[in-house]
Amino acid sequence: ASTTAHLVRLGKKHVTNGLGRLTDGIMSRGEGSYVEYEDGRRLLDFTSGIGVTSLGHCHPKVSKAAADQCLTLVHAQCSIAFHKPYLQLVERLLPMMPHPSLDSFFFWNSGSEAVEAAIKLARVATGRQHIICMQGGYHGRTFGAMAVTKSKTIYSEGVFPVMPGVFTMPYPYWHQHNLPPSTPAEVLVNQSLYQLELLLAQQTAPKDTAAIIVEPLLGEGGYVPAPPAFLHGLREVCDAHGILLIADEVQSGFARTGKYFMVEHSGVRPDIMVIAKGLANGFPLSGVVSRKPLTDHLKPGTMGGTYAGNAVSCAAAVAVADAFKEENILENVKERSHELRNSLEALRSDPDVAPYVLDVRGEGLMLAVEFTSPDTRVAGALAKADSPPGLATRVVHACIERGLLILTTSAYEVVRFIPPLNISKHDLKHGAEIFGEAVRAVLK
Ligand code: PMP
Image (cartoon, rainbow, N blue to C red; front, side, top):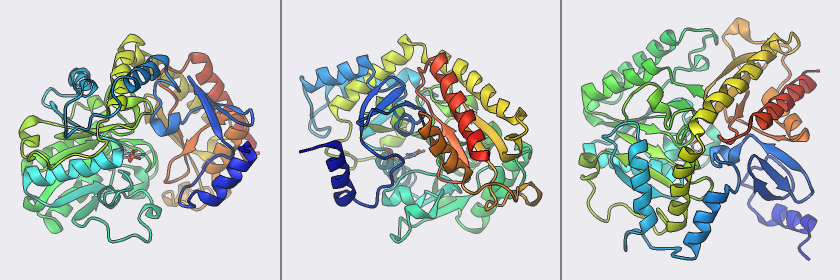
C-alpha cells in the first residue's frame, strides 16, 4: 500500500541522489502562505517554492484559470499555432514592462531555458560571441546558463566543459572585494566597473562581446541589490560599445521587490530581460523580452520548444497579472517589506545576537540576513572567531522545527526571506518572530 512511510522509502531508493532536499516527508497541500505535510506539520512558507508562488499557494483565481484552460485546450504547440492565453499574456505584460522598448516576447518553461535563449538572441543580434557575467551570479543549470553561473562550484562540478566564451567580473558585493559591509556603495561600484574596464581592455575586446548578463538583485549569490549607479555604469559601457545588457529578473521580477521589475528602481533599461518564477505562480513558464528590432534578427524556426509557452501556464500567468492589480500587490509588498526589515534590524539591538549579524539587506520582499562565520573571510578584523559554524543552515533548521519554512542562499551565511507577496501582516509578523526565536536558540 502507498503509505507515507512506504513512499518516502521508495523515494530515497529510487529518486536520484542528485537532488538535495531541505525537509523530510511529503508536502501534500498548499494554501495561501502555508504548506502542509502528510505527517500533519503545517509550515508558514517564507520560500514561496524559491520565489515562485508569489500570490500564495493555490491562489483560487489562478488555479481556476488553469483548470478552465485544462478543459479547453491543454497543448497548442507554439510552432503550430498561436493560442489565446499566449497572446493575452503578451497583452497583459506589455504595459508592465520597465520600458516601452521591451515589446517582443517569447516564452519557455524554465528560467534556465530562457537564459539560454537570451544568450542565443544576443549572439545572433550582435554577431558577437562573448558573454560577460557576474561573480556570484546564478542563471540556471543547463550548459549555457551554467557557464554564466558563478555562485558555487557545485553546479558545474564534474561536468565541464560548459559553454565557452564567458568572462567574469565582480558584483558590487563587499565580500567580493574583501571589504567590510559598511563600505560605501560608491566604492564597490567603482571597484566593479573598473574590473569591467580591465576585462574589455585585456581579455575580451568589445567587438567580440555580445552581452553582459546581470541579476539586478544578486539572488543565489547572496541577495545583494545592485546599487543603481552600478546598473547605470553597465548601461553606459554597453552603449559605448554596442554590447547588449541582459537583466535576469527570474527571481527579482514580478513585484518581488516592490516594483514589477528590479531594474525600475534604477530606471536602467535592459536590452533583453529574462523572466520566470513569479510569472505564473507555480505553473512552469518563463520568457525572454526584448525589442522587436533585435528579435527580428531571429529567423523563423530558430527558437521554439515542444512545451514552450504552454497554454495552461499562460492562462495561469494571465490570472496572475490580473490578480496583481486587483489585490494591490505592489502596495502590500511595500508595507510588509518595511515591517519585515524593521523586525530583522531589531535583532541587531539584541546584544546576544548583534555580534553575529553582518548585514540586513534586500529590496521589497526579497530580503536577507547575513551572519558571521569563522570560515568566511570577512575583511580581516570583522570575522568573529567564536561564530558557530554554518549559522545560516542551523537557523533555517531551527525555523523549520518551529513552523517556518525558510531558505539560505547558495553562497555565504545568508538566510533569505521570500514570502508570498500577498502575505498578511499577521503571518509576516509571526514568521519574523519565529526567525528571531530560532536565531536566539542557535546562538544560545
Ligand atoms: N536566474 C535566476 C536569477 C534564478 O534565481 C534562477 C533559479 N533560481 C534561474 C535563473 C534558473 O531558473 P530555473 O530554475 O527555472 O531554470
